[in-house]
Length: 151
Image 1 (cartoon, rainbow, N blue to C red):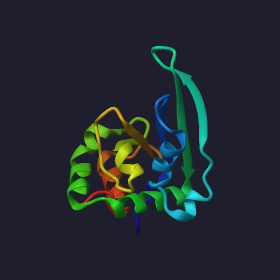
Image 2: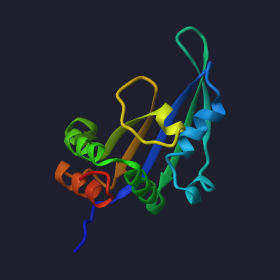
Image 3: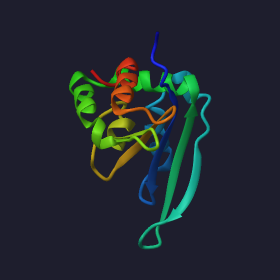
């Protein structure tokens, strides 16, 4: 019998500051998605106001169901072994059991160049993995392992 807990969806969000080219930031987001999903997603843009009244564009993509799992497998295929091991050790710090959400941050610059690397810096793309229900951390880890994100 397979794992009952599945991924419900993922949300990808990033801020494009006034000094950045919004199209390049969108390209960084698209680079996290397999080609067939790139054609289907809708990118939402929201203009926010920064600390110094500067415009900031929040770019968001929401993907649900099987497509979300497909995106996560794609991301996993771009990770090296070390990043997969790091991700496994970060589970307790990045997983909210109450909401069943796992939070990742990847480098915006690297994503633009076609690479996926985890980052705790400020210039990042936020990826939220939403699990069905609120599985225990061991079950969440098992789902991420099945998707290839964790080794």
